[in-house]
Amino acid sequence: MKQLKERILSDGKCLDGGILKVDNFINHQMDPVLMREMAKELVRRFSGHTINKVMTVEASGIAPAIMVGDYLNVPVLFAKKKTPSTMDNMLVTEVFSFTKNKTYTVCVSGDYLRPGDRILFVDDFLANGNAALGIIDLVEQAGATLEGMGFLIEKGFQTGGELLRGKGIHVESLAIIDSLDNCTVTFR
Amino acid sequence: MKQLKERILSDGKCLDGGILKVDNFINHQMDPVLMREMAKELVRRFSGHTINKVMTVEASGIAPAIMVGDYLNVPVLFAKKKTPSTMDNMLVTEVFSFTKNKTYTVCVSGDYLRPGDRILFVDDFLANGNAALGIIDLVEQAGATLEGMGFLIEKGFQTGGELLRGKGIHVESLAIIDSLDNCTVTFR
Image (cartoon, rainbow over all chains, first blue to last red; front, side, top):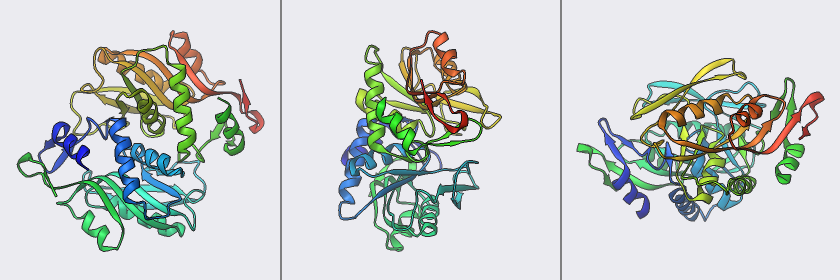
């Protein structure tokens, strides 16, 4: 998506260790106009699917997900990274974060992720795909169907994209970055 | 706001201890259509103010905030509850949570909350107002101006609303609940 790629080049910051900071417009300060355009583009790319629910993980996935849900006119469910004391019928999975080098819990209520649901998962970043694997596990636990996974930015030099596409999942990323070497952004 | 009050009555769940669960449509599963209507109503109520940035706290505040920002066509900044290792120019405050009986850190980057900014804060719940006080502290640290604070649901039987209005802040809540006694919702 041209608009996003241009924004990454103008406002993204590249740090050592393959880190791309987009906290100017995606995951700390957010540009709602760009966010809406990105949501619209994700909806277009998944237009061949029947989707009755959008799913994401807190926190940075919520903004694109709510806008995708608004375009599709379906509920949006965000998985939580802590296990709330008041959640009924809880489905739980574990996710290993390479960035933070630790395992965390992700949960949703089976009251809202249900058998027969046709899920579009939306998140800001795809890197190693571990969070995505956790979501796949939750969707399977619930007996729901995963229709697709849409990401704003994919780090193509990490393994998540290959892993998910290898499972036959319809994956769409609005910008795929093949390299951040020498702090230069190279798009696929 | 009539539409929200009706939804609270139809889909909210009341638990012992003054807890209102709205995880069916606000803070776990979200209804994007209602969310957009609530954002529109908040924008209407703050139409007398000049606002150049919307602010919220992760995670449940993000959905209403991004939609308010979309209507106002201004950036949306979400404060983080953990201190990221890669945040530049960090402003930090501490918030005591009665619900969880512990103190947590809330931070934003001073690169995005800046002197001269005119901030509308948006969140899902106003209860004791401690998170709101943390935001006021961050806004003051940055030398920005707080134009107002908009909430979806206010627990009128807790002290936050009185505290914030007593400071002369323009506070708007789309539904104010005066009592959850006997698990019956009584609106103001």
